[in-house]
Amino acid sequence: IASAAATQFQILQTATLSTDVLSGSAAQNPYSIVKNTHGVTVGQIIGNGVALKYTYGSEEFDGLVTSSARPIQMKLCINKRLDIGLSSDFSTFDLASTSDYETFTPMGLSTSFDGINLCASIYGGGIYFPIAELPDWRDRTNDPS
Image (cartoon, rainbow, N blue to C red; front, side, top):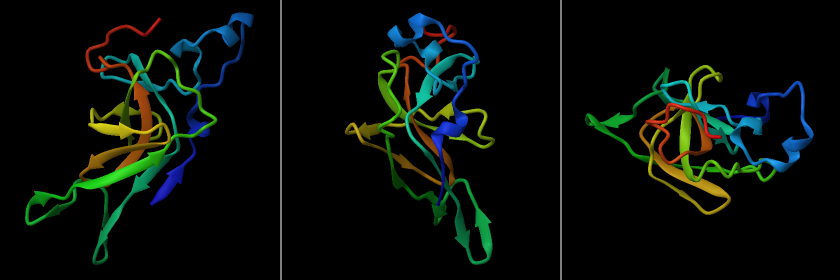
């Protein structure tokens, strides 16, 4: 298990306006980098990511883990970082996956979030980040205002 700090993925702003401090908008949230298949910003990272890889004998892999051709379900819990604020635009919680640390895609998982730990069932290795997202993230074709 490896971890990746969320701060290295934030979008840095080159200019600020005095109204930035008053807005909860996703457009001004540097962690709002989660996009759907339409290229629309639909979520924000809320914590550090984890990379899960598995070994079997001498073979290392990530991806679906099976036993007797059946997927093995694992519960993954990742802490929300207390220094990352939540945009009021994003009201549901999920995990995002990435393979390149540039594209973060919501997974559409059933999650539990107690304000600190975001937990979901996964079926294999990969790179996962806890996110907050729009309830209609799949079909959204325009950025939240």
